[in-house]
Picture 1 (spheres, rainbow, N blue to C red):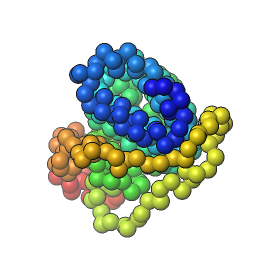
Picture 2: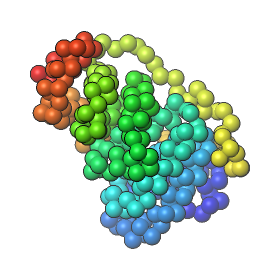
Picture 3: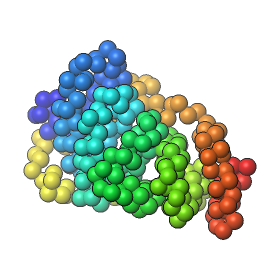
Length: 272
């Protein structure tokens, strides 16, 4: 956690990998992790504020969500979300928006369903619905990997169960349209996502003061076999998991919405 180590871009992926290893062994390193959690989150904020390392920051956040019990960082969670939202607002990067939604979906999938909505609405009233109706829906139209679609589908299902979403017919309809794409219920369009199109642009002011001694080097290939088992190793079958969650809670509602919106017919058929 030495500050100087994190200032070298080439070190960052390896440092994130090392922290992920500690997270995965949190039962053995519980006291060490608890006592250094604030410092870890400070390093997270540091690498998030530079375009060259923000992807590693989101990897670190996902590692926390996947491996650490919520009790390790719950007291910092609202501040954590505020930091990410501030960066999201200043960056305007489609890739960061994508990483943000995937990360939030992972958290929704693995944690109590009310924590993220509560944190967002404490930051600003109505913030969850605003983000869900804009950034979230935009990202769900992008080309996503299978494990990303798994967490996005199951995270979205939890969000749809919230009263504030269920009572918003327009937003609920948009969520259902997104599920059609996430579940691949239509023939593939052949769309290929262009990654990192603007990632080489100069960072905004909040990252301008950071100086790095060496150029960025991707070190993901140094991971041991099996170190990255995907975001949803607990979901072997996306369709089965989605149907188990959606059919009892939204089957009737989807049937009703599909009568007025032909786009939802594939989802209605899927949930029969």
